[in-house]
Image (cartoon, rainbow, N blue to C red; front, side, top):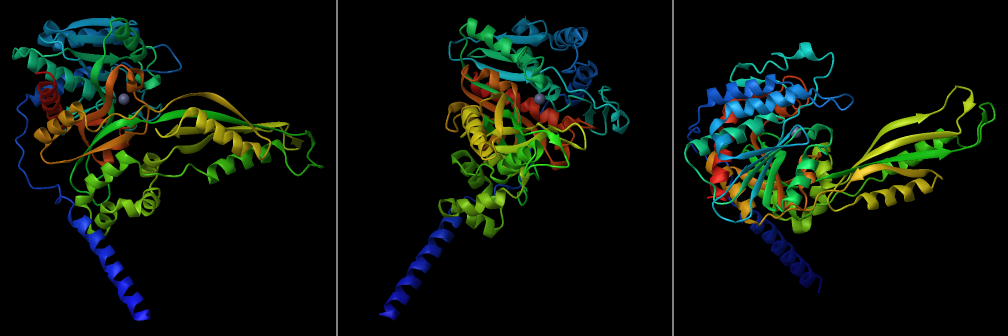
Length: 484
Ligand SMILES: [Zn+2]
């Protein structure tokens, strides 16, 4: 009897192991086949000079003070001078003073496509100016790169789009469907005055896109430990956000005779309650597709885990939450960012408050996050008040013709890279185009290495000239694929 059970369970285990290994082996081979790419046939040096010129126009979104309107007008005039063929082929409307809405009329009446970028840049942090290898608004072309604020975020992308349009227009290309370029002027402070107003204009004109494409992700190289092949991460959704203010009330009086709690200890308990009970990390369909796509490049054990997500999801999710970036992709994040309370060392505070900033995963909602926080805070009699929020975006399709075209253009230009869906962790102008398109994708065709990420909004922002050249070729390839 015992022998039978033993044989039976050994057999079951053997079958189980066979399934695990079988699924692992069924994954495609490593993605990083050695391929010599033909560098794109574009005049990269001239394009680099034009990006440098774009960077020298200081289109800064300050947030706390007025923008330099003359700089934004100068930027619009610069585009017109730099891209004559594109401007002859397209019409351009100025929206709300500084945003630009281009339309390239197509020959047919298939749904239009929308390419989104933003004109504004973040300021240079006061005191950090001397840390730049080349001054932040020099637009210097040196050491194989174009240097300055906006080189990556987002003038590099905007200029790559215009370069592609210019090349296409100069070659006599006529799109089969309408192409729009949607350049907002205040993305860095929420985009309401720019993209928000462009959206209203489009709605009034009855424009509905097959898809829009914006910043918010890109090609990562060396960003995922163990994965050497660049991974083209096409973001299909973007997180939402909300900030909640926790306020505690308690009796005041002299600190020599305190009760069990003061307003400060109460609000602290509520914040700790929220921090200690974060949203559970989960691997949803797009994250699973991402993990399966990068698996072939992984060592055997990781490959085994990723090939068998049906079984290993909790283990993999646990491992991914150890890194704060991948953790953020799996859950709604909880970040206490402000605290305020007390007036004097010997006075019991009657109120104390703190703010938690949540970045909301597409599976959650502003209302759900608020409700959960209220329950946590209620244990300590702490009130929760909403300081406003933005819902996460809907999930765009990974099986649409547009997603396929983006993937194909990427492989055509960059070689056999891994293509996988991803989630944008920050806010982009795309939030203003939800509902204006069947799908909203976020992908910039630049190669980002770990060292690049800190340059965005930071010191020494720069774009390699090669990256600009590939991006121009990529936009050209995508436009040809989707509108001819
Ligand atoms: Zn940006």
